[in-house]
Structure formats: C-alpha cells, structure tokens
Picture 1 (cartoon, rainbow, N blue to C red):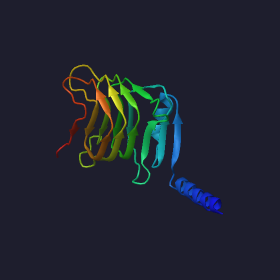
Picture 2: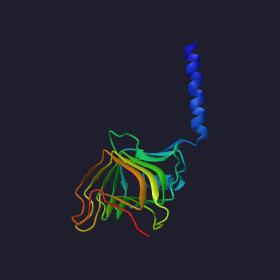
Picture 3: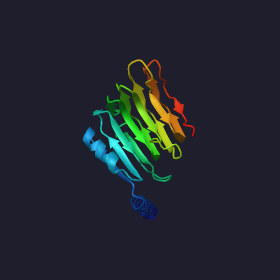
Picture 4: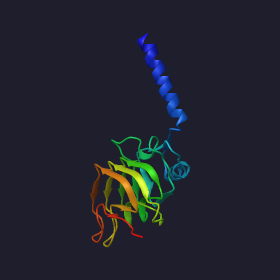
Length: 179
C-alpha cells in the first residue's frame, strides 16, 4: 500500500512538472546549442554533453520564472562542457530567472561570460544564478573580464573559479548603469 501512495505522488509530481513546461534539451554541438538557446522557455534545461563548443554565443530575452528558471548546464558536471573562443564565450542579454552552471568558459578575446541589460537601463537583467563555472584564459591585455555583470539586479555567483583575464579587467566586475 505504501508503494502505491509513493507511485501516486510521483505521478502527480511528474504531471505538475509537465504542466509547468519543464523540459530538458540535450545538446552535443554549437548549432544545437544555438537552437536550444533560441527556443528556450520557462522551465527549459539545456544540458551540454561533454565536449568543446564554439564560443561567440548570444542569447537575448531568456525569460524563466521563479519556479521554472531557464538552466544552461553541463549534462555531466564531472566532465564539464567547454565553451571556447569568440569575442565572449557566452553573452546573455535582457534576461530573467536564468541559471548558468558547471561549465568551462575559456579563450575568449573579450569576456568569458557577459550578462547585461541589453542597453535598456530601466529594465536590468535579474534573478541570474552563476554557479560552478571555471573561467580561464580570457582576452589579451586590456579591459577583459572573466564574468561581466552590467545592468544586472538580483544575482548570485557561487563556487566559480576565474583565472587569467585581461590586465585591465576584473575577475567579476559589476557595473550598474546610472540614468
């Protein structure tokens, strides 16, 4: 009898997750990653298989919700996916309720990860979680940042390692635009 109740609870829980639109999109290459970013909706988890993905990725307007964030993560944190190169490995603009987890970002000419308001000062990106990233070998000398947050409110950065960024830049700067 106890097993039946547990099965019923699990079934109800899975139904609720499906109704909330929670889905996982498995990606194995940069083109699939671009498509997944373009199609992500609240509750989408984009899981990157181990391997190296071409940087220069940009996602604008990602809109998760408090109970259903958009998550971009390695499928296997023990063998993290690597996003390499581009001006910025990964640039997220004008977005909310987004989590970026357990990735390696490396060898970008500008910034490793850039999260910003897309130039809309009155509408900052918000509720952004960055966790378990390894950001390294970013930019030549100059204002090159490991993780750049510009026009972002309500954010968390947890357990990240940032090393070797441009001499004029920062590991994790936060710039708030004033109107």
